[in-house]
Length: 162
Image (cartoon, rainbow, N blue to C red; front, side, top):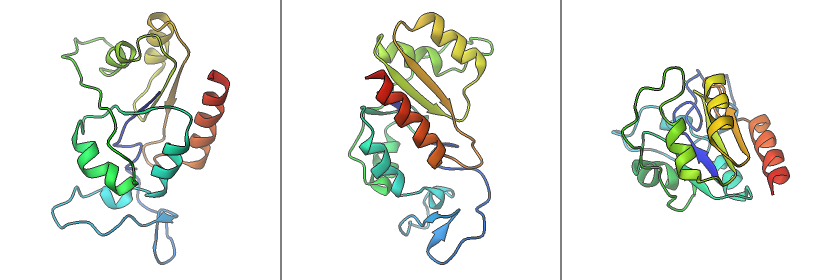
């Protein structure tokens, strides 16, 4: 399965580079959005939905957007509604990200990829100690969001983990 973060991953925080008409950040523009939409939704690459759906795994939202990810983001990406990690009240775990324990619990020993912009070495260590299946914790550059390189790394790992 692939645990998918939103902010900094699907919605990059960086300033778009100069691009041609109909392009943003070198990517196709997202569809027109209502005036009251999240101010960064225009940065979503709608082509990511097709790429994510083509991956040989189940997609799961792992984001503070919670069920709003299905209401707002899935349609922009052309994705069906996805399962959403319901975050338990997490105790402070020092340098370990607050999502880490909940994702390992959700995975229940199954192989998983976690794509997020806030993954640290502490998370890598915690998962390797507490998760008994294969896992790829893939940190995305939040200024760029998911890139072709990220998809290549994820696809390669998923093919090897089968």
